[in-house]
Structure formats: structure tokens, C-alpha cells
Length: 137
Ligand code: HEM
Image (tube, rainbow, N blue to C red; front, side):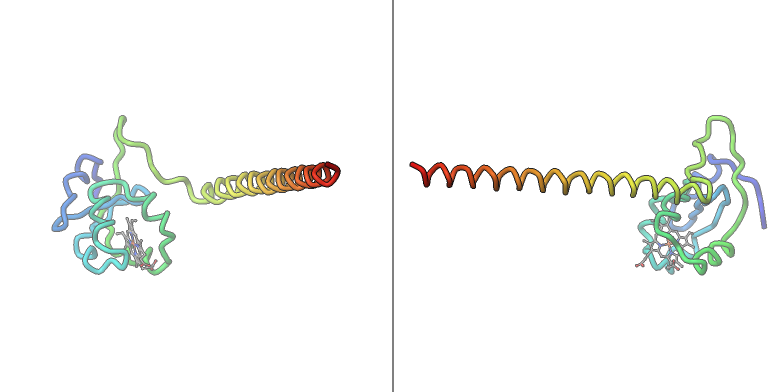
């Protein structure tokens, strides 16, 4: 069974007894699955009637989870002008972005360690001087 539904249509299915989620512009009926979800029903109810792509992908679901998803498919999303943009980054775009982020963090961390080292060295020098001065007095 495959039908075209708009965001408005999907938004009506947002209760535990009637639960649709949108993942990658495909609509899934999670009503029967909600009690079985290893990640708990709460997270599914949170995204009921909405675009759950980001939440779903953030968790890094297994291929098995994706197969389960396939069985829950009820239709495809029909976007209308003014609808929320797809939340999903296109496959592949996540990794480079994450890598850049990680690299940026790495440089920041490196700088922090370097600055920490310099400050510690400065403090050590200062203490040595103080001690030397105290010894002279
Ligand atoms: C209908 C859509 C979904 C299906 C079919 C599904 C399926 C599954 C399956 C089979 C697992 C077991 C681990 C794995 O195989 O990856 C799982 C785990 C999990 N799911 Fe989902 N999931 C769905 C949506 C979501 C959403 C929207 C969230 C939101 C955050 C979510 C959060 C989680 C979490 C946190 C776990 C890990 C649980 C644990 O390891 O303790 N899932 N899901």
C-alpha cells in the first residue's frame, strides 16, 4: 500500500494508537511497532506525525532497523510549498561535515594544550625567579 500524503495529513497521526513518522520523505506507520521499539516508545511518540529523519539517523540505526522500517512503509511524502524543508542531510553529507567538525575540535584542543603548557612553563620560571630572589635577600 503506497499513498501520497502531505505533512498536514501525516501530522494527524501523532498518537500512540495512530502513529506515523516521516523518514527520508517516506511515511511509516509505527503504531504496531511502538511497543516493540528497543529505543522505547517515548522517542517515537516525540516525533509522531513529524519528520523523524534526523532523530532516526542520529541514533545510527542498524540495517535490521532499516528492514523493520521497510515493513512499516505506508506511503511517500508529498511536499507542498511552505512545508518544512527535509531535515535529512543527503546521505554522505553527514560524514564530511562531522569530519570537519572533528578536525576543528582537534586543532582547538591542540592549541589549548599548547597554551596550557606555556602558562605552566611561565609560572615555573616565575617561581624560580622568586626563589632565587629570596635566596639573595
Ligand atoms: C519507525 C521508526 C523506527 C524503527 C523501525 C526503529 C527501530 C529500532 C531498532 C530495530 C532498534 C534496535 C537497535 C538497532 O537495530 O539499530 C532501535 C534502537 C533505538 N532507537 Fe529506534 N527505530 C525507529 C525510530 C527511532 C526514533 C525516531 C528514535 C529517536 C531518537 C529512535 C531511537 C532509538 C534509540 C535511542 C535506540 C537504542 C536503544 C538502545 O540501544 O538501548 N528510534 N530502533
